[in-house]
Length: 439
Image (tube, rainbow, N blue to C red; front, side):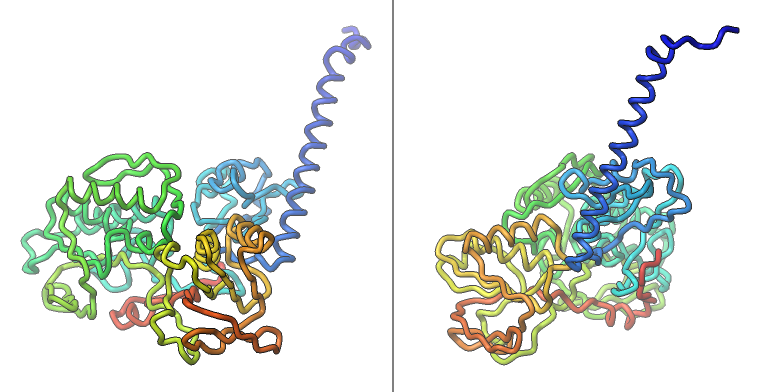
């Protein structure tokens, strides 16, 4: 057989070689860019994911990049990237806990975990059916660590399916299930219970939507196609809080599902037929309980003089109410940054954002960019490394780097997080674990 001619190499092999060289150079360029982004994030102290996030095993990762492509946030801001041929979390605070990366990985190199070595996260122990350590008590949605609307809706109806599968209709308890909370998980569970003709009651201490209801006006809430019982596929990609709540109210009216609003659970105790649940209005005997409450719990207060004044609140509902006022926002998470920038957009406002640390380590990039823009445009006064010391009727005193500063103040919003309902869960008998980067 004759050896390949020089023409063969020119026509066939040279283009393949050039293509391979371009491919390698492109991979090196992307790797260098990802390393630079990761370094910037970590140097800024942005190392702590807010919730569920991936840990990638370098021994199993083959560098295919499917996890990078699958990430729903990656189209807006980087989350995952390849560095030296291995997948890595390059912007931890941008991770929203979607979990699509794990599903997409063909080499099973990704584990989804809660918390990190530095920051533990309290999570109730659940089995695959969403049942807690207390037989007959189930948890779905944000309290179990799944804050995404799509995930919460799925957990709500799947948990109800688990309850329905174990429900004996001849049981003595008047109710098959008491559902606590009418956020995404609780609403989904209520519709599924109705669909399965279960004896169910849903109680909600505030309004339909739960945590979503508490979002600031106009906030975009990301969703993706998900099955909502009694309705079908919710085919939303990006929708405002108001439009999503309007849609849910429409479903509530159309299905005639009953939810007892402004009814707060006070105690859950074991009984001969299952559980006795006492609220501020009623007492219920039920075989099972499904907890679909949020993780925020009781708002965390600053504990300073003057905080009990009516001008101090713990969440933003409508930025418009603060027009032409001097407003202080306290906190460094997404809720604080969103509140500050939303109020700063209102005419005549003077907004100060106070945060005890030197960087926003828990906030998404897009919110940090909005803060930077508002500061650059003179619409917001940013006070990092500062602590509120006292409120008076017309001012607030803030200490920054040893200096006491007093500024005019008409209203304040404290976004310092909430005290998790861990105590309530433990009183009920539910086992809670603190996760430090474990599944």
